[in-house]
Length: 230
Length: 295
Image 1 (cartoon, each protein chain N blue to C red):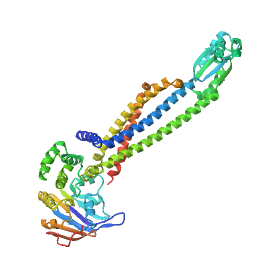
Image 2 (image 1 turned 30 degrees about the vertical axis):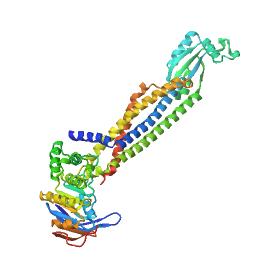
Image 3 (image 1 turned 135 degrees about the vertical axis):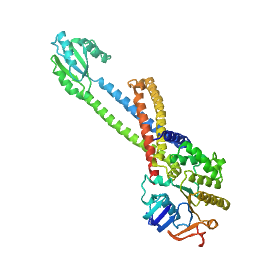
Image 4 (image 1 turned 45 degrees about the vertical axis):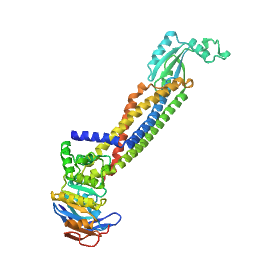
């Protein structure tokens, strides 16, 4: 579960990125986070992953008080999250399998667990036959699916996807979003930051809209406001 | 640390070293260069010190025996001289030997040939352990009954002492400076390799790897870079030293220089290189990765 209570975030240069946001995301929910550039979406993601600490307010992520978290607890909190980035951020010198095994190793998984889990996750994202390929041998859509597999491989309770379709064509975007919906149906909480209005409307999920660091709308069923300016 | 983690870290450290071949090569190359410069300078200092010691040991005090002493009394003086602190050896030189030696010093001076040994005195050539105590030792020798006079090159001895002191201070200072410069260069080279992998580190942090888990492969890698650099530097240093020794031996004008055998030096050189390699490798890795572990 994710809970933000009166969260404010002001950077050292004086930029007020988040202004008094309160938000609850229940376990197993699928939420789109939308808004124009500079609306505070990226800062919100950074707050959830513990990359930045709020100036005031409280943040709870999967049982961890992120706003006051210690350096020792931070990795434990991050193990409950799977993060997907727009630019995939795969390690080019490692194969698909090694990109996944590396993050499992990072949380202390044994070789046996790794050998069992990776084929399952690659099958889930439709890349079973690509485990020995290197990222630059894959298409953009396939690379993003590897990124999803990497986010899933440690079995997190929440997936946070930051503009996951930003580098994909419409067909691949739809395919990827459908995959995230499927993952959500398996019980994982999914938070997707996106600019793609059509895609958001297509799935009829909860949509939280940010503008100037504040939530201006939070409703289920699709994005019903004006255009989202990237 | 669990066994599988140890083997994982070792494997990661090893494979990282190869997968980032150019940067590893640069780090090893710089380690080798720094160790070689430091090692060469230290070996020059060691040899200079050994040669200075040799020259010091040739510095002697002459004790002249009173003409009135009988051969038995002269013999007794030798025992008393040997008993003095700081005296390492006492050699008897008869007046005949002294005359002969004097004549040999001036072979072209007709005036100094065929001298009557009676104008010389029997004497003892005394070598001492610590040149800094030459004055005290000379006084003790003069106090021995039957010693009529002494002669010691106190100014030359003082010169040697000053030379060695200055050489020691200069050597230690230069070696320290070189060591610090080496750590700085190597740490920056490893920083570049770490910078090359900041994405990897960011991903590890994002998936919940602890700082220790991220740090260990770099520590192993730094260790291996340091040890490999030290090993290469050691063998190069050995080859270089042997080449210099041969060059010195073959050069007539350098016959006065005594080179210390490498067989006497290899253990401390190997230990110092291994120690310095590990310190700069591991230290450089730790300092390089520190800034990536702060967020």
